[in-house]
Length: 504
Image (cartoon, rainbow, N blue to C red; front, side, top):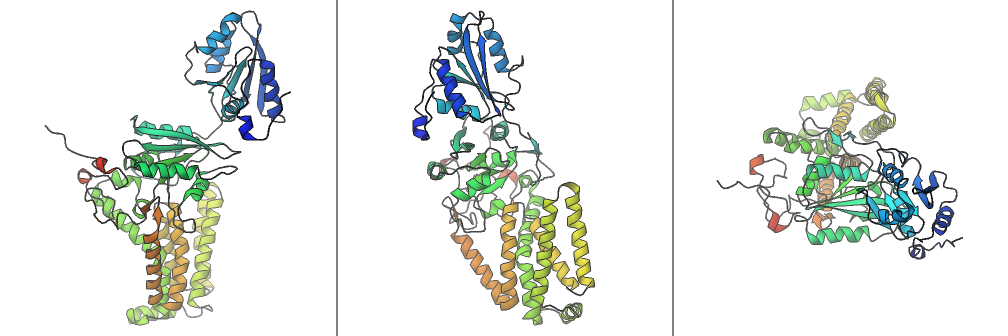
């Protein structure tokens, strides 16, 4: 019996033996109490004299013996081969199976096995064969849920990182698009794909990303969100420094801008880096629609962002400290609406904001159409009942509703969440310091954003560029498509031109 070493470095030195019995003993000892992994001894060859061993995860390789599978074809062919020719047949891959790899160490064997492949051993052959199969079960390609558009592709990423990379490759059929593989997590061995355009990405930026991925050691990575939090610059900031997307077309577009896309197995969210304020405010269809409407919608989103952050604080500042800036009739209307409300204006607004947050969270957690019904009906019932009971005034219900609509208009959910938290900061500043508190909050927020970096790139790019590029179109207003001839500053300087007319 082989002695199993706990030290991984020692395990990597264990070679695949030419004696099948030794390989089988080692495999069975490593896989003790792994009921989901099948170990199948067999005798192959025309005279049934060659001992072989197949190891595979039961669900991941359920079609092993079928006629149309690579494994099935290989094994069925072995029935007809004389024993003396089997080693030569395997060594030269005579069937021409596309994804067959020879493995010389046991660590390579178990890495291939746990990735969902089948591993084949043969007596007298000092290497194992990794043969790809259908792999682990996954949901497959489905429609995008969080980034819906009226115009553009409806395909969304799945839980399989290889499927996701293929969806991007489908849109960028160029060998200059590179896909590098990395396994992260000492126990999960999660497959991570690093995608970039070789001729567009800056070398120092690419090296920085690789260094950060290699800078930590962790038990397991189960989602791209864990990867994001481990590698971001400013971990304490509520603002995301990576852009997330479920859309292959958005990922392809960002690769053409010179950015890098990180994909994590078992996660339908791809990470686009570096992140920038303006990128979070863009939607995929901004580049598919005409520039007039796209510009209007972008400007509307910025107004929605301001409303989602400042509206509750501004309301409190005006009714508590600066009533003189409003018309008399409006002030009297506000005062009349608040008659009989037993709470202060700050407590009233805070109560209703938290109630709507609770309804929103409940609607997300309850599955299907029932969740949507809870959100709509719950909002109506709570708002109406609170007004009827004189707990809040009608104007506060309207303020909270407009704030919620503003946050929902922001295209990126993670980016919108930062402003949902910031809203409470401005609510207290406006409620206790008035307009001066709002100005102070804006100053602090802009100062924080101005000092925020994502892989060395200022977060407020392109608004803080020394020499702004006119042909990029990544500001608030979207320029006509034929005028968008330059790439953003993320790309190499000598590859800044993306569009030019052909000479006749």
